[in-house]
Image (cartoon, rainbow, N blue to C red):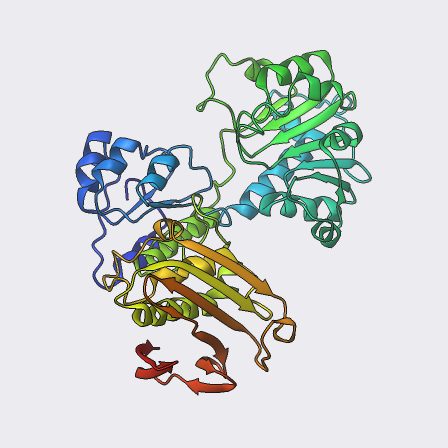
Length: 464
């Protein structure tokens, strides 16, 4: 760890058997290069740069955890090439960032910062400090992920009408949140306030530019507590100066720290804060604990939550599908032993029943990690490398719609083709444990080593 995280997270790491925690706070880049040679995990905040050079020096590295959302300081492409999982903690600061966003919205509606400064100057200026209500105003949200959704809930509670643009937003999700699903131009046209909650990508960089401001209502107010660069700062300054934009609340900038002579510092209608989105005691505790838990899960052979260089699932979905992940590992173990000494060339995974449809990609990536592919907890087949194996996944919504007759709540069916062997074992969650399904007869896998037969072949299975 190159920078401090929550003491609770540090204590959790130290409590793990076999872990050595190196607290290298404030280390120079040269010191980081020296330290990473023997580490299996690196936990960082935004200041430490995990470059290609650092990753190349870390020969045993399994994962990099970012205590926060942005991974701009991590060379994700280089990590992916080396099979290193990069994880962030997007849920830990969700409430903190949503509340800061709403603080900016409120201060744009009611000029509280200006009133505070006026009072400090000994004035009693009520006439020039009049504001407006948020009630009945239109709020446009660009990006309806975790933070955008939390902002939407608060806006609706204030009586605002919410219009949301998100290319991944479904009608059912929009309806459940009580927002109007809209195009980008529709959001620009109808909104009295606009708030940004999207990642910075080549597609979103400069999304709110001069052309965008020309499509907005005159006097529109805009908030950005997401990533600097999504709103073109020069276009924003020009819109503030012309009156096309009636005010902005910005917590993030293209270059941070913001230079002293930046034009936005000179504009009275620009409410600026120094990247405080996650700066609450609760958020810091959450992200520190979350990144520690994520690292422990990966190092112990579990499925990564919130991996940015893998198709990933959030912590809530991961909790739902966790039994399937463990089950998939056991499937992998059985098939590998049945195929031995042949080499597995491809895998087909079919899932049936409620629950197994969530995180199907994560379930399929758990297959090759099962023992006895590799028995070292720190050198199991990495999910990134596992993704290179030819895997197909199919989901059937309920057993009775499946192509094979079953009377089971949920089932995973695996077919593995090897050079010299083909096997089709099937396992299901059954009575709170695991069972092997052969024809219609479930065989309970008790604790310990069990003999399981498939078409004349016998495999040993270790079951929890």
